[in-house]
Image (cartoon, each protein chain N blue to C red):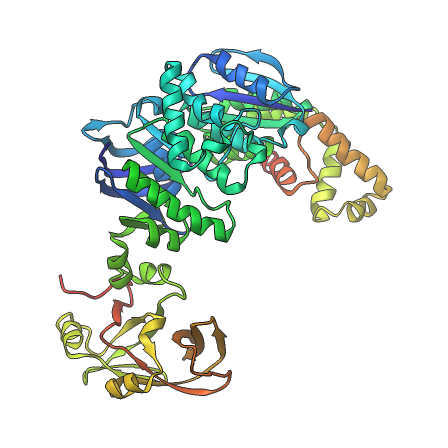
Length: 368
Length: 186
């Protein structure tokens, strides 16, 4: 078990391409931390620096209290799982799992014990004599995990391990990896571009963009209190809506065809921070835009009239797409209300749930 | 046949990597093996079951060291060896085709490419250079390029194949043609 500490980590490639910078993070013992962000945001590079596959250009990386910048990968006691869930085709499942231990000259009986134990955890016992060819995608993925488990390493690094699986299997494996982590409790750094994986699996999420950490927090905190427009837009499907407008002296938010009352506490905050009569960004999640009468009555001051451009019935709910000015906006409403394209619709913003962002920095406006 | 240059970041019981590769790829033939460097040829059909990218992942997880793999057609050995020799410190850990390895070097340490460029262009005749230029100007449309040069399009194809044969770089691919042009600018 181990703790990971990143101090001002920076990665610059030859040619002055900065992949990661100002990376500060402490991963607790037994924690399952997920690095998430769009491709090219530096998450895999960070993981590879932990693994020792990339040099660290600046800053320090500690595993427990040992600075490992210059420690060879094999001396870091780390096990990796890659996206390709590669297995040796000419070896049985057993031999695939045993291989790295054989390389490390473990005694035979200890190898056997570890492999049997891992196979037991992963439900692979009946397949130990099979070759990878005779396994399904999910089983192969479990063997790949097994290859990491037998190492009994201090830290697990997983680089998009599920992205080669089909959607159904991915959901299933997601749950299995969480269960596995609950059981073996190894500190894990998991990299994905899939925000759903991040939300469902992580103890804490690290959201990255352009080589910088945007926010670190537990999933709910990140969802409910995004630090900035990027985080708000990245986490959640459909994404958070952003409306550009002005905060008036009268305490309203005004934009094109929208005028909504800002609740007192939020209005005070905006005033205190000097946003009166200034342009700001309003962020609201699709599920916080309502069409039910009861909500419309409660929030009389925050109605918007919109013309439905597209309505997507998803089963339990309907995504309604409309436009405010030239910006698209999505509302997620109850599917029982039959909403047609072209229809005029009156909706209410749940103003207690909205966030305001600075138009220049795109940071959320909040109490210090 | 494809050839594969493998560079290990540190010297290690090479025989173990070797033993593993023999098991994996029956057609494998070891050509040179030094401290941190192995060069072998392999039938590309052999890699269907275990593609080179996956081989790389496996080697990294099991041997826990950096590997740079450069794979290329038979005739480009000299260029690939040159790239590894010159550029090993700047090449990223991973599996690269010859063109990708050239591009990595071009992007990061272009000056290292000069000797490689020299060797490569020595192999091309004036005719080849004219062909390349016309092919690029015609946006990789061989028949248009042939018209411009007043030659038959089969002759054009033959010449492009000939360039692949002498350099190992397939200029009919975007990456290949791009790299040849990029090298010309050095």
